[in-house]
Image 1 (cartoon, rainbow, N blue to C red):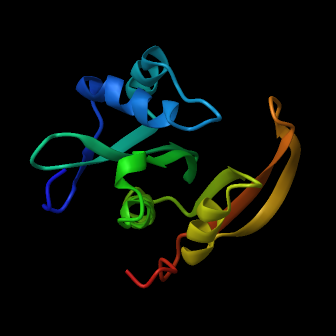
Image 2 (image 1 turned 90 degrees about the vertical axis):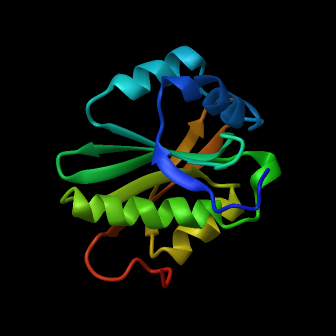
Length: 159
């Protein structure tokens, strides 16, 4: 990994294996390359990555949908070797700025109840609890916590 600032760009088909590998590192599983290919073709889906400028390695990814003036965050993940570098914060700041640019009024997401790091990140960005889906993650029986926030004003993270 280089010392250069990771470059934010749209994901493309050349990234499929790396996108798959990042989510496959999650013990809860990820999307197959075919699922990623399909996601990249959806008109309402936005897939962004942060890549190492020297190596081209994808360090972090984010997938969100713009539907009826609202943003739904579907994925945000960082390669294990690139964690604790603020990449998730950078992607969240991009999400809010891009949502405003696209004219969205609200952002919603769901997160595993046990994912305290993600919950802390979302709270830093002004997301508030909006509900619970009991037993949503069927394999483990874990609840999904719903969070949401409007897009007016400050991004909640001081960036």
